[in-house]
Each structure stands twice: as C-alpha cells, then as structure tokens.
Figure 1 (cartoon, rainbow, N blue to C red):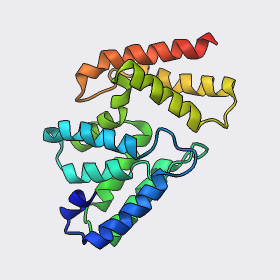
Figure 2: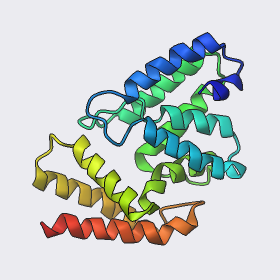
Figure 3: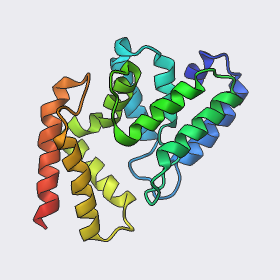
Figure 4: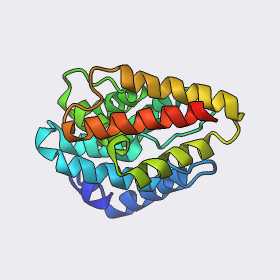
Length: 197
C-alpha cells in the first residue's frame, strides 16, 4: 500500500491512515472470501500481467479498493466501492480517481471489452476459478459462509445462476488463457455438486 501510494507522493502518515480504514473495511463482519487475502492474491496475479496494463498503478489501486464495501445482502457494493475510491483519490490528490472508479464498476458484470486495464483487473479477480482444487473448494465454501443468511435451496439456485453465466461466456479470461479449461471444469463440478444434494 505504501509503495503504491508512493507513486503519487502520498505522505507516509496519510498512507498509514488510509490503510487503517481500508484494513478495517476488509476485516468487517460477514467476510470470509472478500478479505485482504483476496486482495493479496489479486496483486500477485496483476504483477504477472503487468506488461499488459496501460496504467498499472491505477489497476493496483482498483485491486485494493474494489471490494472495500462488501455486504452480501446489497446489490450496490461495486458502486459504493467506486465512490469510496473516487473520494479517497480526491483526498490523496491522486488524479486517476475516475479511472480507478470505472475499473471497479466493471467488477460487477466482469465485462472488460477491449480495455486492457480492465482485462488485467478482471482476470486477476477471477483467477481463483482456475486455481487448484483445494483453493477452489475453499473459495466456494467461503462464498457460502458469506451468504450464510440465505436458505440452502435459494443459495444453490442463485449460485448455479452465477456459475452458469460464466460457463455461457465465449471465454472467462482475456489474458490467463491457461486457466480457461481448469476454471470451466471446476465451475461445472461445483454446479453438479449444487444440484446433487
């Protein structure tokens, strides 16, 4: 966080203060997957895709802030996270606030179009779908925990709809093509588990 904000010459004290607020959000109740661990994993993936990004620092800032507001009962998390990002950039005199916010908004539909920065961000966000079997299972379990308030039949139906939408796409990944087949296999397996019980 400090290294990234250093790119915009943000003072260490201001970087500390803003990090504490972000950390507090990500450690909020009801979060099991959408935590700073998810942010860390995404940042690693983004580092591997850095050559594809046009504005790498804006992408990294979007990674940090894309789930800063997360409530599994709400449908406007992305919009509220984008708003948080714009206000934070204003406070820190970071001129890319609007760009960061627009990238965050794309995590709602996961449609990047031909926007290279969005492709890097969204591939990093979805990389878990092509991860190892154990990592994928842990992710699926954590998502279920985040929706613990949803009755099992309703959760299964809603989750299947989300997963079906990914399978219906011509491709899930723009840049992480090697994850395409493993992701499709794991999604199909989860759909079959959701339908089995």
